[in-house]
Image 1: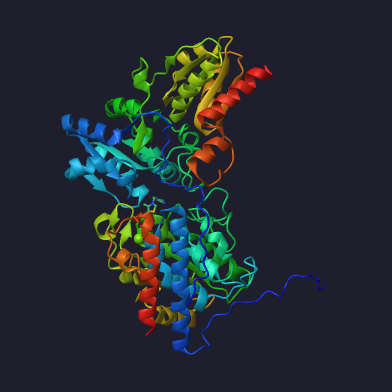
Image 2: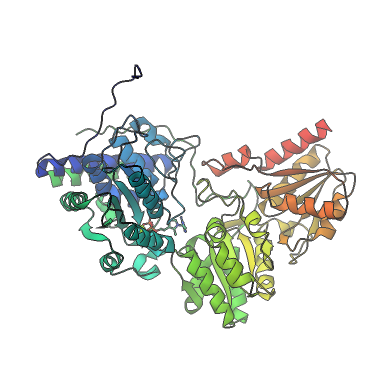
Length: 303
Length: 335
Ligand SMILES: Cc1ncc(C[n+]2csc(CCOP(=O)(O)OP(=O)(O)O)c2C)c(N)n1
Ligand SMILES: [Mg+2]
C-alpha cells in the first residue's frame, strides 16, 4: 500500500565521501564557521553557557553533520539514519548550532537557547529537540547507550547504520564509560564510533590536574578498539579519521575510537587565550567583537 | 559571506547552575558549608574533604584552598569517591564528600549503602542541587533523592534551610555516628533562621514560629518559603505556625505529630517529590500513632520536571513563596 501525503519528498543528506577531498574540507570549514556563528547567537541570548566547549568542538560536529552522516533533516525519526548521540548534555548549544546548520532546526530558534518554554534547553534532551537522540547530561551514559543502539540495529539486520557517540574527556573518569568500552569490544560492535573531545578541561579544572587520563590511545587499544588520535580542529585530519573508521566499519568488527584534541574557544582568538573555565566568562559587549574575530580568522584561513 | 543566524529579543535566562534560591530581601551568606568545614578542620585533624569534580560547585573549594593537603579531588567518578571516602573512614579519618544530589543518589547508591551504612562508618555526604534547585532538567534535578535514601538503614538525612542550619550542622554531622547525607545549599545561601529563636539540633524538629490557624511542617529551603509565606499570610489575618524538620531521618515524630494533632489546617512543605519524602514521613508518623488528621502536601509532583529558569519553575510547581500563600488561601476558602 502506498500512503499518499502532501508532505514534500524527504531529502536524504548523504555522506560526502564521493566528493574531491579539497571540496570536502571546504564544506566542513564552512559548516564549522556557521556552527560557530550559531553558537555565538545562543551564547549571547543566554548571556552565558558552555561557549568555549561548543566553539572547540565545532569542527568535529561539522565533519559529522556536513561530511559523514546519513540522515533526513526533515525526518529525524527516519529508521535508516546514522545516529549521533551527544553524551555531554551541556554541549547542547553545540548540537543545536549543528542541527540548525544541517537544516534540522530553524535558525530563528537558536535565540531561545535555555529560555523558558524553549525546545532548546541548556542540557540536551531527546524529549525536547528533534535530532537529539538521547537525554544526556548525567555524564557517562552516552557510550553505553551507543552499545545498546549498535546491538539493537545489528540484531534487527540494519548493517549500514553507524552509531556515533560524542563524549567529553571528563567522562573518561566515569566507570560506566569503561564498562561500555569493554562491552563494545566484547560484542564486536564494528558500527560504533566513539569520539572523545579532549579539550583538557573538566568542571574543577584541567583534566591532568583533576584526574590524569593519559595515555589515552593505549587504553582504547588495550580495550580492543580501533583507535585514532587527531587534531580535532583540523577538518582534513578529521575527515581522514572518520573515513578510516567507516572504511573498516561493519556490523561485526572492532569498535572505533577517534580521540580529538581540541582547543577551547577555537576560532575566536580572544576566547582561545582566555582562562580555561568550565563556564567561560564573556562580557555583554563582547559578542560582536567575537563575531568579528571569528569571521576574520575564518577568512584568513580561506586564503 | 553572510550569517544566516538571527538574534532574538532577550528571553528569560536559565542561569542554570548559579540560580539563587533567596527571595528578594532575604540576606545571604557566601559558602557557609566551606567556611564551617574549615572551622571544624581547624580543631579536628581527622577531617578530610573529597569531591567528584565539583569542588567549585559544592563550596568544597573553600576547604581545598585552606587545607590543600587534606583535600582529595577524585575526578568525575562518584562511585570511587564513595568507596574511597568509606575506606578513609575505616582508617580513622572523618571524610566530607561532595557532589550533586542526583549523582550521589542515582549513581552511587550501592556504594553508600554497603560501604558506609552497613559498616556504620562516619562519612558525611554533602550534595548540592537538592530537589528543584536548577533549571537544567531531570539530569540535574534531584527530585527524589530523599525517597531513594530513606530506606537505607543507619543513614542520617538532613535537609537544612539556610546558612544558619548548615553552619551549626557541620560539627554535629561529624560527631554523629554512621554516615550522613546533607542536602547542601551552596553559593549565596539564604540566612533567615537567626531572625527567630532557633538552634539546629541533629534529629530534632523545632517550632520556629508559633501560629493559631495553620501549621506548616517544612524542611530545607521550603522552611524559608514557609516563614516568608507566613509573614504574607499574617497580613491577611492568617496566623501560621512553622515547624522546621531538617532531620528527615531519624524523624522527630513526637514534635511533628504533636503540632499536627490540633484543629489547625496542616501542610507539609518540601523541595522534593511528594512521594517518599517529608509528606510521607509525616503521614507514616501520624498513622503509626493512630492520629487521623488531614495533611495537605506542598511539594513537587510525581513527574519529570521541566527545564527552564528556576523562578519560573518554582512558581509552576508551587514552591515559590507566592505559590505557597495562594495554596493556603485557596485551601482555607475551600474548607
Ligand atoms: C555523572 C556526572 N557527574 C558530575 C557532573 C557535573 N559536571 C558537569 S560537566 C562536568 C565536567 C565534565 O567534563 P567534560 O566532559 O570534559 O566537559 P567539559 O568540562 O570539557 O565541558 C561535570 C563534573 C555531571 N554532569 N554528571
Ligand atoms: Mg572536557
